[in-house]
Length: 404
Image (cartoon, rainbow, N blue to C red; front, side, top):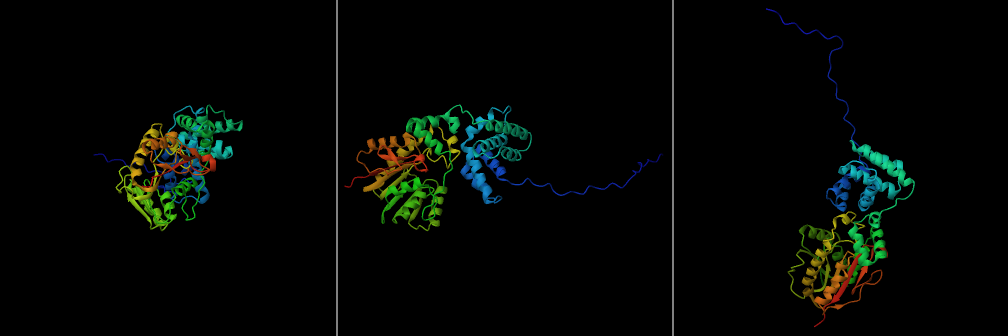
């Protein structure tokens, strides 16, 4: 019987297990990495004005970088079409959402922020991993060289201004070509924060609409579509009057209540109610404000990605909703009281055309003087274009119910 042979002994030092080294260093959080994360989320359906605050609430950036994130995300969302046109002439392969977001982000910095080419390209490329990194590097370097040689020659105004074709065509027809272009250019610039005396941040256009309602002490006022509560709280502070702030979405109604509580306004009563089928008795209110859901084409500077969500068919659909809300609101105004209709959009179908419908459907309603400048006449009401005073675009119309 043979004996098994032992394997030969290894020469040299004994085998030792490799000790684990320090963990790999995590990629540092930067303004551009957060901006790219937000842009990918927006491309997937998130809203920029929701996802950006959520990401910034993680507290990983200082104040300067937080401001840069907002500028990068909002600006890139606004100028998405223009940025795509700038880079697509150099893109030869399909791009995934992360690469596309990086290309847009780099193009925005190069074309609109005028960040030095080497800084914009290297900082953006540094946030891209995988095979897409080479694509982003090559495309942005070629774009930088092109922009250094002169401004781009845009194929059409919609691409240059970075809006959908239908929107540019629609506003040109409704406002006139020159006012429409000026409005679109203004809405490509960041919105400035305007603070009311009570500390609430609210655009001046919305403040002017609330003032046009004409609240007085002791009145009962209904804000039929009140969320998030800016106009309702403005009305509550002007008087003071009792303000019933209604919204059909419980979550949005809670936002109204939170804002009223923060302002210590006990005279705001928040209710969940469908404005199309109000539960109040006829002639219950001295003033009724119908700040109706609309296409929002007057507030695109503060909702940078909304221009890509709104579709042509939304305008007539929303105009029908606006008429239904007004049908429900008219009976709620007491004799001698006032109905105010407002929308934060610029389309004829949702502004002067709704006024024409009101004149035909309720000829007994008496038009009150339209809001003064910077509003301009529109039907019996007033239209505030964004370029007139650097505000949101807004329409307002006040009608009086005859006294018996």
